[in-house]
Length: 228
Length: 191
Length: 221
View (cartoon, rainbow over the protein chains, first blue to last red):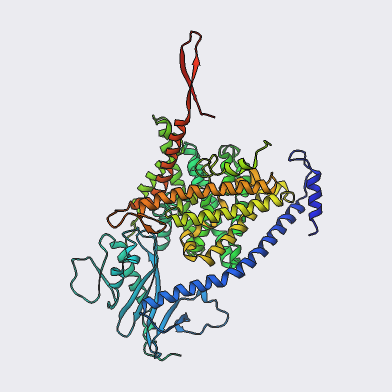
């Protein structure tokens, strides 16, 4: 490290703060620049060690969520929205992070089970993010899992923690209709909302309805097709 | 358009940066009991926040995709430089204001609200326009909290407060009450 | 500079000059992540790591850091350690990393860390700087633990996830929400103020005719 002896000398030659000779700006910038470079180098190493673990964890979380909402598919495939149609091939040069996607699950015999779709919208407190399973053949929801929420603990966060509420989404026909308990008519589109947390419940329902509307007929094309 | 409006109002009221997200507490606790100083502090913060937000969007989009682990370092460097520039500008334009703000100006660098803004914006994946509205809302919310606290403290300075409560204990309880009040803004938008 | 014993340097940050409870630094994380004991401990340890590492580097290289750019250099060092802590937490305990969220990054602007570098680590030998960092870090953890315990016990009825009170306990949800953070710290500080007030003893001034009068209260040394 070539400039350290110079800095060491100039610092030793200088008395404390007052009366210190002017340190040239080039030295200042060089010191900071070198410190920055060393810091960057150290971080690269730590990053290399950490990144595989972080990615593995994220993939596992996604896999578990898909398992839950599609009722245990044997495997799943990611389909990206490219140029208005769904494909499992990433075109060259395109960063997958920018693309919208859905996940298609298959059972043991290779038959498609349904789509797992993510959605997010502002709820009562902050944004609610969830994943839900959908079978376009029957038009029914297969399952729902809230991934992130900051709703009121004990009330709104029941959308994530209350297994009764979560279970209500299985087998419901789209488009979903939220009803308060006590107003149930038996309509197959109905989902009973949580008492005292209607806004959070309604947000969940609307996320699902909006996503289904958003993907629309794109989903129908894939249902029933054998695995590629 | 509705979404941008939600972002702004949410950052300002529903998830107020100071009273709900606990950012920007140093100026909040330390600001003198003068409403005028609070407003000026708030304005300086809004300005730094808006520019930080724009630079952060730029960095996120173009530079940091290759090296995401440099995010914290680059953000803090940007903020520190911005504050230096703001300081020099205010010194030139209005020396009186510079004297009045005193130590609080360089402290904007360590104001968790500025870095917090950049980090939240990144985590939520806002683009530059969304980030801009987020920054404006956050800055307004911060200013609102500062002004409210300053005006309350203006009153309590003259009130008969028990000795043990004088000081930070009371300020925090006041802050808690404000935070409680702001919780009422939740559910402001029902779709 | 006043000569201090190593023991004093170590213990000062723990109680007498506790960074959160006395100096009121680092309030942002202290209020934001103390809604459970687990989060408090994680944040405390992460901050301890950053403080310790930064003090180590700053004290070791203090001769090489020019005075004019010292703050920038400290911030650079601190930011590096924070990034390391962030990456390690994300890789090893992802659920806690998610719970702490943006506040890991905000350790960088924790005035406590920068303050220790400026006031102590840049002026003292490495050993003393490490003692000071350790003491301050432990003080920070203790303060966070106090708040976390208070809020989790009242707000969830549990400690470290273990339920304490049984099914009939109606938790004070407010304690784990933002106002609860403010109230908790406020009450702790009020408690301190009361305790300090008790420690002070009245000093009696003797008037010439032997009449005593209380003229001042001064803290017992």
